[in-house]
Image 1: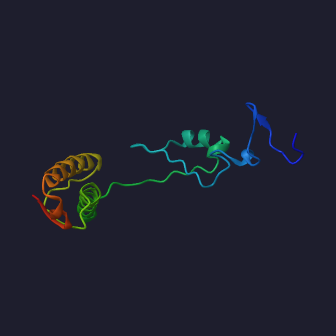
Image 2: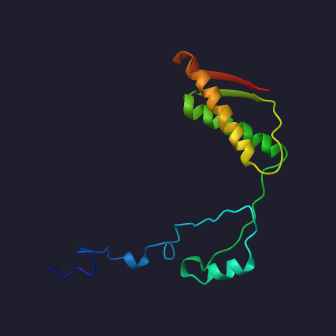
Image 3: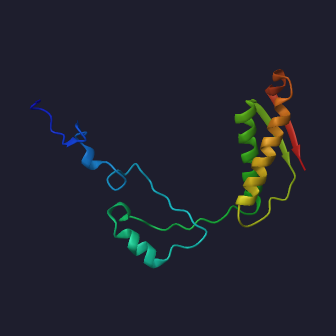
Amino acid sequence: GDSKSSGAIVGGTTAPRNSSKRGISGDATIITIFTSNYELETSSLETLSRLEMFQNLCAVMVEAVSGRDRHSFALSYLNQRLKETVRCKNVTINLDIDCGEGDTRPLVRYLRMLSFYICALLKQQPQSDFGSVDVSVT
């Protein structure tokens, strides 16, 4: 065989020379995120931290977007969906709706449905109309 080959034989092929450094626990470029609506219990954190791949696990509390930021989020979400789906250069959206409080998922579901409907209507227009789009949601 090749005297320069230093990889182990795995399944009939030579494993990459740095394969021992691969995987979640040995690769700092892989970030693992658990999400939950509940706080991570201390016993669960301790148990997970015993595993090599989660030895640096830390809990980070994230709160739902609220107040004026919630309206900005909704406006940004619609703007992004319209620009990507309909491929228009300039989108102006007047968003005059109650964006609610608390859990953001119902708002995102509503915005997803709304953006789908708006895009479907815009796609019915001639392509030349997509340079600039004005949308009003009330």
